[in-house]
Length: 120
Image (cartoon, rainbow, N blue to C red; front, side, top):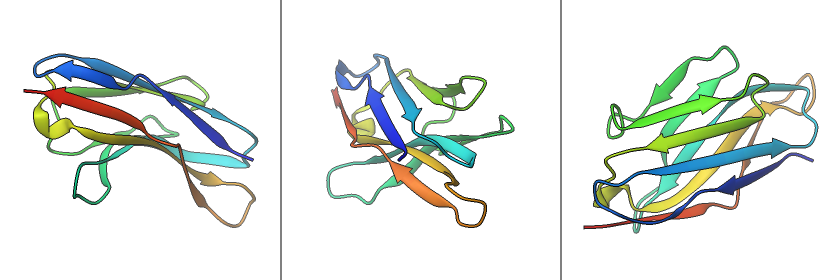
């Protein structure tokens, strides 16, 4: 069973930095992508950044230029470096892994979430 372990959230002042980590465990037939989504107070869950097995990244417009998503070679782990944080970055950040547990069906796996709070 695939599990995602997140770490790195916390309280930071506006303009500060945080680094989120996510480690995937458990077997999977083929991993497609990993990344981060977030959900702010009263908002729906939204994309922050993803990276696929080929190394291509996708960032939300709101974080471009401030966040960098990196990975290990096997796409077992991803790391989100967030700089120049703003109050609107506050929310619960969820690690996501999309992949095939078998040759036929893909599935989205989610971590428990880690809280990021940016004080202004």
